[in-house]
Image (cartoon, rainbow, N blue to C red):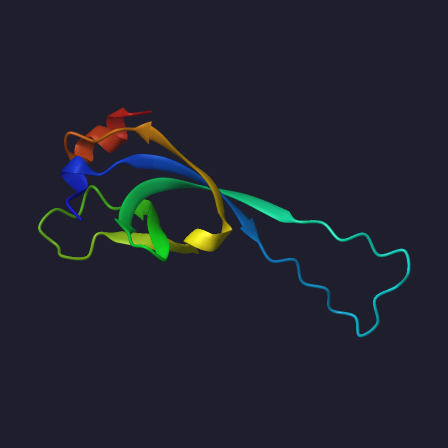
Amino acid sequence: MDVDSAQLVAVEWEDITAYSRTAIPEDFEPYRLRKLTCGIMWKETDEYVVVVGDYDITNAGKDYRHNDFHIIPKGVIRDIKVLRPGVSAPHALEAAG
């Protein structure tokens, strides 16, 4: 992915709910966890999207400048909103405020 043309996105997705007791009580109220992940859309396939929430704009010349990956299966995504269609250069992320 070329970060110069990367989109800034907000991905709303549904996570699992874990219950750690061995028996579910009668007053158990199941609920669904909804998450919101914002960042650079790094990759999109038929099965998942990869959103990078942290990109090192000061480490120019290095191959690996991104971290904090979120690999989200498409089956749990509720909505993807494009916050910024494309960034003109990595330093534009700093100016985006």
